[in-house]
Length: 465
Image 1 (cartoon, rainbow, N blue to C red):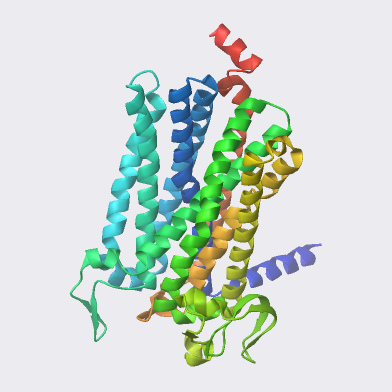
Image 2: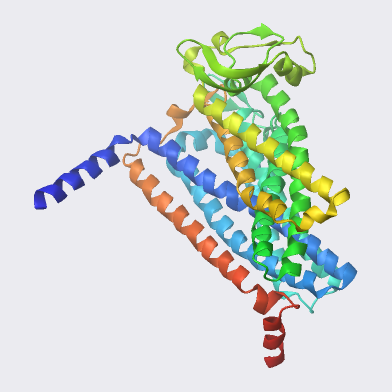
């Protein structure tokens, strides 16, 4: 028995040591960003749902909307706190894992990070005013505080994206003999990738959060509890989800054209496009074969890729073989992530079309379980697409941490034992996620007692108090 346990421990330790420090550093950033992007996107969008519900209450004086606003505001507060923690951890990780990168990049793109800190403080003040301002402030000033939470959260997200966009499109300095000279932080912040990335990220956040919130309330409607409360919440969330779903192809087109101009190798990896050709086909599905330089089992739509790149069906699109192989990103990862993003994006658009059709032509469908189940199943779709899109953005930039200037391998810390940091941070993020689930589930359970004025439990509690 002792020998068996010793063997198990030896096996576990050997597996732990397999991960080298460079891989561990990249895995830790990927894991941290993967969690933080969900926290931050919910934090960006939920305040707008809350403000819209509050506006409906002020216009209609319907107490259900007031209860919904209060319920959502508590969720906003929870996610704001967790987002602040995860964002702070990420800022420390940049210095811990990529010191060479921060040494040179910090002075150049420090402005968006400092402005993001300002937006964060405004958001913190506004959310405090909103949570404790009921019946204390002018009603429209109180509403504006809630709306300001959304504006400052959105600004924070856009400013962080500006820093990431700089990594994809470095600007605001001259790179001479390994030195970063003539730094212009304004030009660095408003680089060529900033607007396309910020626009697509914002639209995707509204789509993902809208579908997630609508899915949760659809499930609660099907349980036949607090139906009026959850129906109003569902309609608001579904409206935001549709705006995001229908806006995503437009913002995606802007982003794709920007990538084609600035990072043609990333575009080629997204499509597993190996050969340079005019009238290039848009690829759906398929399995890339990097050794043979081809893609198998794909559906090809003739000339569509050329048109998407430049609005011309005969535009030449560069293939991967035109670039040095040591500058290729991981083709399969980028291609599959892009396909996943496209697939779930199309599915959400189709759901949006069905929902719009039911709103205008088949109102009886709105109360059907099959429509609610559709939104329930779509709850994670937006965030799956969002994570896939960020995988395309980050992995597609490899092997560069600053595109065309600094390789990721040259920026990693020389400190050993990074894999243990990776395991530690993973445990923290998993714990944060479990805490969020617990707190939000508790909020949902408190709807009858605290937030829904049509519920007997709510009225009984208020009579006692």
